[in-house]
Length: 81
Image 1: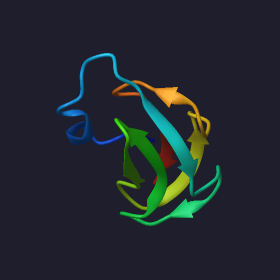
Image 2: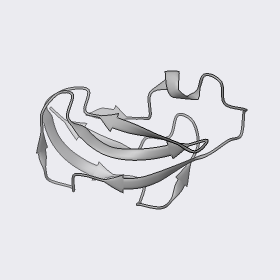
Image 3: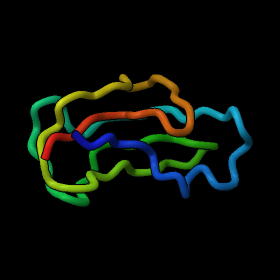
């Protein structure tokens, strides 16, 4: 099982305690995905960032709902290879 998070580099210049907003998922639980596929979009400090699949597999769980906020390091989804 692979945990999917918003890339740490995105958080580099963000104040501690700042949260991101999950704008939308472009997949649903059970979907098969390819490596590098866009899974969703998150907004952090008024900038949109795509969430990518690190490898091919199947989305097992979406842990954060659309329009919910989340902190750095939050597991947004889980992927089964």
